Length: 451
Image (cartoon, rainbow, N blue to C red):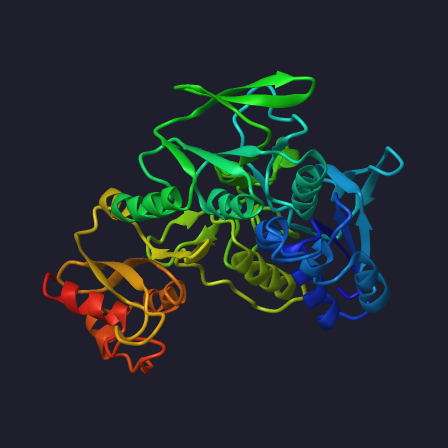
């Protein structure tokens, strides 16, 4: 096994975590990584903060460079190499060397696919214009920063009100741009229930974002290779630049026609060891499905935490360990200026689809004791199973000190805790950090009366 060739497609979180794990376990093994960009092991989650200039240089987002992997860890990282095709019958991949514009075939004994996600955009004319930006790779973040520095845009349109859309709204506001956001549903953040999404919509309007809801992208007006106007189903919006915030899709187009099994949206199906349906082929990160511990369904969630964890499991599995990834509960947080937004578990619409009988409660509290300086408003919503009281989901919106409380609820979901279990938790208390009853416990106390 130690002499077998491991080929990894994709050199970011999942791919390089797996490569590093295999190298630790099998020091002499041949490991080749093909990465389409110039960069490895970077924080895509940090891109909005680089654009806002909270992070001064893009190098600060890079954990380990290709040179470090090659020289220190003996991992053969080949940047500017784009994989075009996977032939699982003959155990080889077709690769384009972008620097030399040459195609080659590379054999493998074991293969890990870790190609991540790509910004979704409807197939409309002009989506590839020079001032239309996705936010999925470090290169895309560098492109946005360079465009702002060189072209000095006055305004921007963000298409989509999810995590990326909101974080980029903050970044562009801080750079002095006028920001318009179009969102196809009634409220931003479709990963929240509508009543909680409404609070986020109100918050970003208060920050100065022009929010246009129930509007969909219909097209672009393009002049000389640049978008000059975004066309929605209701109006034309003149703009200097466009940011796509409509979510991520698995970057798996190169697998079409291969034997690797995908779901309807192109995500790779894997088992708990990150193995695909093909022997000796694994997948991890934003290109793969994962198991939801609450709904028991296979889901696609593109987050850096999951990418790193599934990459570690894939690396362990490839190295011969019995590593497994148990699954996720769908925990996520984001920040928009002074507002923090967090969620975990299932939404009301998901519970209804699963025919789960549930109860819900929402409370307003404070992040610290009400009398302590800097105390801020926090809103907590909990969903629990009727009769049993088992927690099913939670959402939190507030200012400083609000969002990380979601981790208590994520822990509760992971271990099937009930509302009573949450009330009984010995959570920390001091006036600078919390009211005497933490807001998540206050919400549980309110909801337990309804089960």
